[in-house]
Image (cartoon, rainbow, N blue to C red; front, side):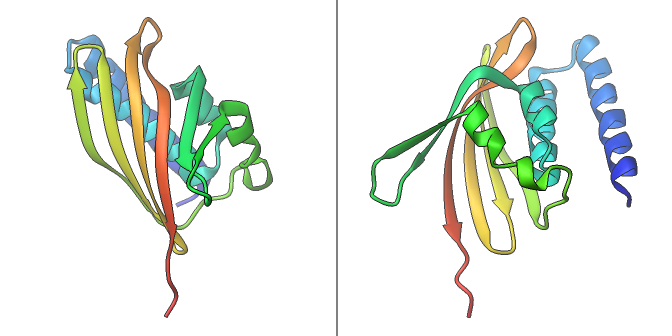
Length: 146
């Protein structure tokens, strides 16, 4: 499947979900739509997808090798995608769990790449612009090669 067909299919699904949401579908569909766009951004190194779902001031948190807390701004994180923009990544990306209470949601995501596995915990808020990712906490581990 070409990139153009994948993007078209993604937009078709997103439009369908948005139409359902406008008809009163549950927030879970809207949260799932936002996170699927995030996953599409990861799969294709597409910063525009991230900007569409991340709140501008959202931060990314992780534990550094020395055990201290690490933090990235959106702009710092986006720079890591510049060299591979548009390139399709190998691996499976999936939503593991969604928990919604009122206008707050938490989503667990698993990114299973050939050389590493990442687990993301995304926090979303329902804002006037829709469900937006306001923070990301992640854990990554390299695969041990036999």
